[in-house]
Amino acid sequence: MATLLRMATAGSVDDGKSTLVGRLLHDSKAVLADQLEAVERVSRDKGLGHVDLALLTDGLRAEREQGITIDVAYRYFATAKRSFILADCPGHVQYTRNTVTGSSTADVLVVLVDARHGVVEQTRRHLAVGHLLRVPHVVVAVNKIDLVDWSEQRFTEVAAQVHRVTTDLGIESVQVLPVSALIGDNVVSRSRQMDWYTGPSLLEFLETLPADDPSTRHTETGEVDRPLRFPVQLALRPQGAAVAEELGEYRGYAGQISSGVIRRGERVVVLPSGKYTTVVGIDTASGELTEAFAPQSVALRLADEIDITRGELIASAQDAPVVTKDLRLTVVWLHERALTPGAKVLVKHTTRTVQGIVTSIDGRLDLDSLDARPAGRLELNDIGRLRLRLSNPVMADSYEQNRSTGSLLLVDSQSGANLAAGMIDGTGAVGLDEEGL
Image (cartoon, rainbow, N blue to C red; front, side, top):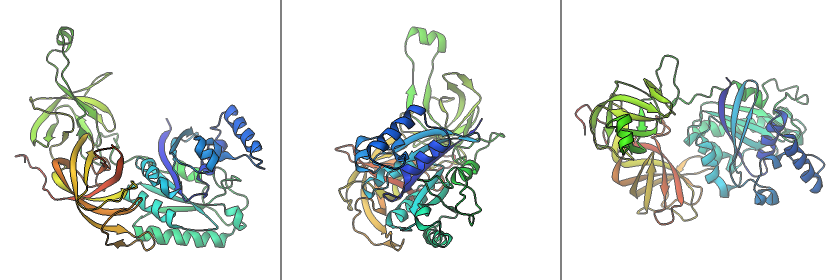
């Protein structure tokens, strides 16, 4: 069975992201005949001398009319070696919030750079977002290499720009390769125009990447790289005579395992109460299991009667997260209204929603120098650091340790609009021991 790779594309406006995605779909034989005919027809109607493969992903009418990507377009395709879920993210700075969405679950971020223009501000922003979201792999495709006469020198110059930015951001590994999405060189097939380039094509490289997320990997030995995190979505207490006859006095807690593995008989802790208990059953729609692992959805039965509701967390007794009302965050601000200290927000963390107040803004990332600058407010698309004080505790890991329990959303309490995507840098509390809180 082919492994699954989740990938996202990003880059500045007109760098050719949608064309690259269309080329991947077309050259990997993932486009149906009627879809291709429709694209060819629209291309002729627009007076183009080539098939505009960007039309395969720019599905919204506004996108086709304006020639830009607005929404995240998800596409699915497969090769003989693996399957792909691809998120084509917008390049326009106005839609950076969609890039955050598309990159948040990606195994690899493919950032396009126009060979003529090199690294620009939006390139730095997308690379910074990829780093903050801890996307495991970063690929920079230097596109439109045909428009600089397939120049090795120009590719080397742009690659040096990329490496300076990624080094400053702290991105440890990045693959830079030249492509022409419009013509198709080095996207799926190797280019004959660049005999100086001896590396893989983009698709060849993507087919070799490991796709396992450390927070959800389940190995053949049953061990995982991250401790158990099980946010409770629903407490199950079926009612009725028929149910009682079949199940008896059933009490279970349903949710999706965010990380780790859970086994029947395992000692766990329920947070934020700090009560310890043992898992006596793991139920699914298909029957009972002796163990389950991320990202499976299950219902857990516990040995003790503990009052557990939505928003609480069942975790490893040996390695529990921090229970805290104080958070230090790095956020991407996604709203037109600026953020200032004292702002009241709703904080959505796993299945838990609590009120919070911004106690301070500690800085903003300067996208030109990539240094942190003092800031009294955050504007749309700013990347900054702040501190939150919560009305009720959350069970938090740092984002570096766990992408699920280390991330959150800031939401407007009146409109319900998403304000920011946040990554937890640290907390102001201590962990638990066997005696509880």
